[in-house]
Image (tube, rainbow, N blue to C red; front, side):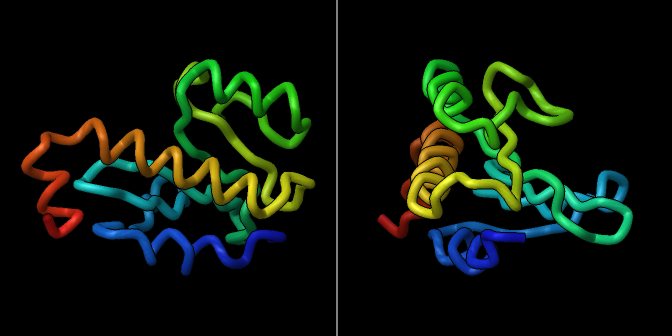
Length: 120
């Protein structure tokens, strides 16, 4: 996978936990018990997609700009997007997409939970 920094980057965000959804073989990144990103692994544990959530219009814009961004694999295709882990999406663009996904899911949590996670 081209984006070997993903695990450290996502786990460095406040309140992020990681687990393995064994039946799908997905490494999931969660905030407040809600998934905001996942690395989908094949039967040999090789990443084949990175899934993340975006506002619908923004997701569509990324899909038009980068052929390595497609509607979410095995996910709601309006809100979720999949990125080829060996593709040509620049690191800073993928980091921005992941940041937005984190912010969307965090923003959907109750205010008290957001404050708790952010240490406010």
